[in-house]
Amino acid sequence: MSSPTSLKGSCTCKALQYTLSLPSLDEARTTLCHCSSCRRAFGTNYGLTAKVPLDSFSYKVTNGDTPETLKKYKQKNGVTREFCDNCGVFICEYGVLPLRHVGSLDEPEKIPPKGEFFCKERASWMPEISGVFHKREIKE
Ligand SMILES: [Zn+2]
Ligand SMILES: [Zn+2]
Image (cartoon, rainbow, N blue to C red):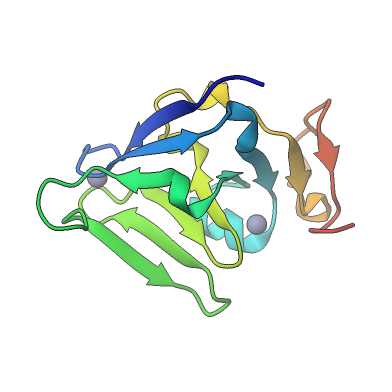
C-alpha cells in the first residue's frame, strides 16, 4: 500500500478550499451514481463521488471554524449537501455515508472510479465504464 497522502480541492471562486487526508489513495471509494437524486444535485446525468472517512476532510479556515461561504442544504431523504454560497459549486454530501465530490479536487484522476450504482437508471446514450463493478441499484 502507498504512504499517507493528501489531496486538495476547491470551489471555482476558491472561497472554499479543502484537504482530504487519506492513509492511501485506495481508501477513496470513488463511484458513479445514476440515481435521480444525484442527477438533480449534480445537474448532469450522473453523480461522481468518493466515499471517504468523515474526519479525513477539512476546510481551510481563516477565522472561526466554518468558511464564510459554506452553505448546507438538508434534503428530505436525510442527505445534507454542502456548497459555496458565492460560486455555487457543490463540494460534498453526507447522510449515512460521507461522500466527497471528485470534480472539485485539483487532481481528480488520482482516485478513479471503482464502480457504478443505479445502473438501471443510466442514461440510454451513456456507455458502461469497463473494469469496474456495476450494480442495478445500491446492493444488487
Ligand atoms: Zn466558491
Ligand atoms: Zn445517487
